Image (cartoon, rainbow, N blue to C red; front, side):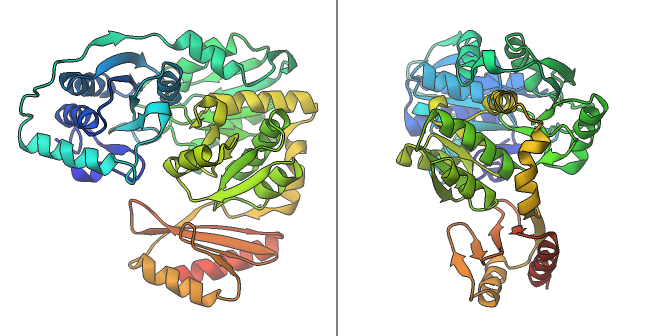
Length: 450
C-alpha cells in the first residue's frame, strides 16, 4: 500500500498499514536509489511496532537496485544524519513517524552530507517512481544487488555530541528527563554516564505503543507530566523529547515551559561564544528576542522560511554556525548542518552551569519584555484570500512575504502562514506588553475567522 498523500513537504508519514505498508516501503527504498543513484546509504529505525519490518523492506528495495546498505538498527534520527556525514555516505533514511501517534509510520530521507530530501528537492520524484513501481508490481531490476551489513555507530556518535561542550564545566544539576517511551530512552544512557548530573529518568523504556502519553511535547497536554515532575523533584531543569528524539523541549526550575524562540536565543549565545561573529539562522515565526540576542552576542542574524529542508540549505549557503526554529529544531554546522536533540540538551546544561544562575533567572529578561501567543491554528476555506485580506488590513505595517505574510510594527508583529498539509492558517504573534498581545491576538484571530 502506498497512498500518495503520505509524501509531505519535508518527509513521508502515514498510517500503517492503511496508507503505507511494507510493499510501499520497498518501493520507496528502490525509488530513492533509482532517483539519486547513491552507492552507499545508511538506514536506521525508531521503536514503533511497525518499524522493524518497514526498515527491512526499505533496505531490500534499496539493495535490489544496487545500493550498499549499512543497517544502523534502532537509532534516533540524528544518528542517521551523523552516520551519513561521518562515514561519507551518499544518503540515508530513518524509518520514523517522529511525534505522530502510535499507528503512524514514516521516513526521513537525506542525501550526501545529510542534505534533506523534501518536496522541492526530489521527494516528489521519489513518490512518482515509487507509485509507478507499485502499479507495475515491482518489475525485476537489472542492477546487481547491493550488500547489506550491520553498522555500530554508537561510540562515534557519543563522542561527537559530547565534543560540543566542556564536560568539566557541567555542574551536578538535578534534571528530570521525559523520554516519552521514544528513542531518547535508548540514546541518552551512554551520554548520561559521562555527565555529573543527577538525572531523574522517566519513561525511558522504548515502546512504540506510547503507553504514558504521545511523544509530542508541543501539545500542552503532553507537557503536563514534565512540568509536574520538574516541580515535584525541585529540579534545576526539565527536558522532554519527541518520538525520534531529534527535538528536545525545556522546562525551567519553576516548572515553566520555555518557548523555542527563547531556547534559540540562549543556544545562539552559547554557540557564538565559541564561534565569534558567526551567522545564525532563525525562522519567520520567532520572537524579536532571537535576532536581538544574536546581534548583541556579536553574531549575524538571518531570518528564513520555516522547515528543516529550507533551514539546512540556508545553513550551507551562508556557512551559518547555528540555526533554530520555534518548533524546537536546532541545527549545528559542526553536526553536518543537521538538527539534533542531544546537542541542545548538553549546551543547556553547560550554559546553566557556567552562568551559576537558575534557568528562570536567565530567562527573566526575555519573559519581562517579550510576550508570545505561541502558534494558533485556524481552519479556513480559502487561505490565499484570507492572507490577501490580512495584507490589505495591515498595509501600513512593514510587510514580508518570505513565508506566508509577516507584518511588523514598532511594538508588535505577527506571521500568518498556511499549513503544508491541511487547510489551516498558523498565526504567531508577539507584542511588547501583555495587554497589547491580548488586544492584537484577538484582533488578528477575528479577521482570520471572520
